[in-house]
Picture 1: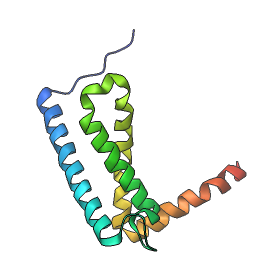
Picture 2 (picture 1 turned 180 degrees about the vertical axis):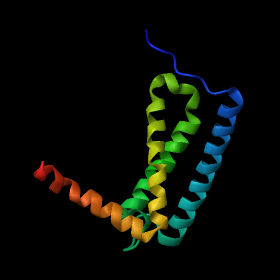
Picture 3 (picture 1 turned 90 degrees about the vertical axis):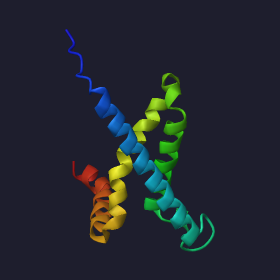
Picture 4 (picture 1 turned 120 degrees about the vertical axis):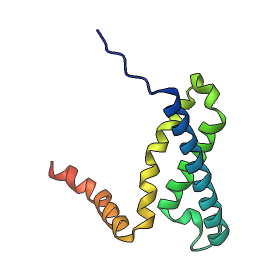
Length: 116
């Protein structure tokens, strides 16, 4: 027999939904400030020239799509919620040393495959 997963109390679900909305608003404001300061596509140092900013953009847009289409979860929009798992990667932008470390790890993955 399969065991049913325990359900979170409604008050906890409501709290988590509110926190999720707050983070979505904050990340959106941050994204717009960066776009205003750096430019969106044009220019040498524009917002979408940095791969980590592209990740931020994808996470924010997916968050808003999930926010607006939450009632349509039966249509497959729940898969967009998995993109929110990438939110912790946003912290990489805050710490330059961490960014170098993660970039080095990602760059070394093909070499690890050769070693296996």
